[in-house]
Image (cartoon, rainbow, N blue to C red):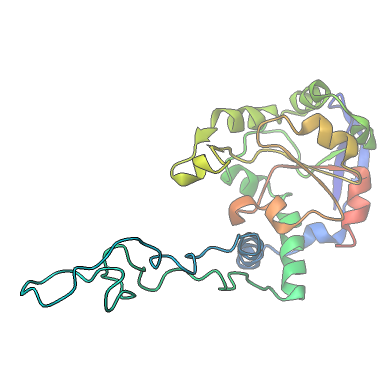
Length: 250
């Protein structure tokens, strides 16, 4: 299986043999498991305070008054959930292990399958990415790309190969997040657009980090979540020639 190598000007700069990893069978089930496990393992511990509902200056008027009343926090039964200002019933426990595990071979196969999915133009289009109809996937660029440090140079390349529409799609799709997340440093939700996989992310990472939805990863560290955000495989991906030789070992 071969792919055309593009120069920074978008013109053909030769061809390259793709590693066998690009012929891996599509396994959406394993990709989903690997992505969900990665997300679960990043979760911060969450739970009720150990003394929640037990600290209050309120005083109970007690019993013996011939009237019904809800138990008060410092009276008898102060720890029951129906107590005014008392504890919750079965609150979330901070000590709960929310992480998930995936077998080593299954995780490796999930990454290989997600890599192969980047070659399927139909799958990439179904994921919502916008690119020219004549764009050949996988999109491979010469190693000159790894020397770029200017954002305008990356934009120029994407326009030349017909993939810049996807960056504009991500920019237009940026919305304010619903719920409390907007108050916790996650105000906006932004669609994922192009993923650049290189052998070294020093230059390209600086050049592309300000483009909407764009991510840069090295071939040695790219994972299932990079290649399939939200567990949906088929991300529009640009590979450098050096990255292809390194990803063959994944």
